[in-house]
Length: 99
Image: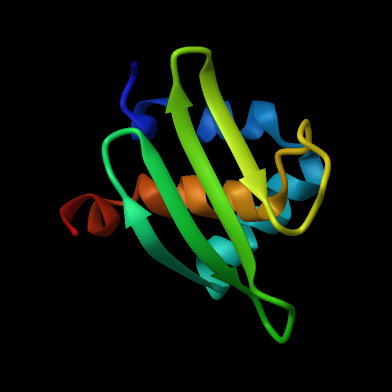
């Protein structure tokens, strides 16, 4: 399997998300709060908080079939939401990589 951060380049995140979800996810990454509760080479589990909205539990995983994601904001398995974008962007910042 491929390390999760290798699958989360900004270009890849932009391809997976709709234009509005990508833009909103960038804003969440910049102005919101992403708290990683579990991380390893192949999985990221985070709680995403933004303004006064309900926190979202977001999971990104590298599997033998590629990138998989799940977020509590939606039941749609095909939707790469703004919370997934924020987690992916934060995971690839230099500070996140040193933690």
